Image 1: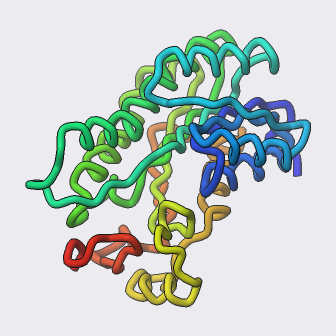
Image 2: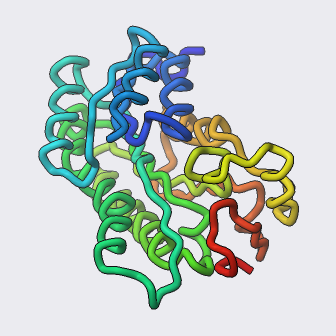
Length: 262
């Protein structure tokens, strides 16, 4: 229960879902965790529940100034940053002919530019320490295409490419950069209609493991990449998707507009 003992982790989108599960797991493994999110009340409540090892900062990941403030707080108050989990993200269903420029910019801003800015601000701190682990939470849709999720898919493929480029750029400084690709996960974003577990699992019946994932299962992959156990892993992409990316399995995604997903 001390795989992250002495480490400091910044986790975006940590007010709920996969980010919350990751923050709780990391704190349980000995890390000090900085939870960030635009959902201030929820994020503060999670940090208070975790206890002394956690603190919350309101944070828009598309803001250069917000990133600078988060990194300064972690560096000055906690002594540095060992781990960055770029988890914040949004999903957007729409046929391409109905796509607005504002929607496209919002999705790409949060899902791709946000992590890019995060690495921009965190990397000098990690370079000074000569080490660090960055985990970008992409998606199974960063490994394949999906009907009706054109902008989301584009943003997650871009994040996958960003990960590989940064692995080259930062590797000589001792910084590892990897991506995690969740499939369906039972979170507020993944279960927008708040369906009961049996209905969710039925929707994923054609995925090899025949069920939706749990936030804690994604968090475990991020934990491994954050630890020194993964010291020779960088530029990798880890699918945590129940086998979804091993073939063509198209669940009827909860929350998808009717007719958008076959």
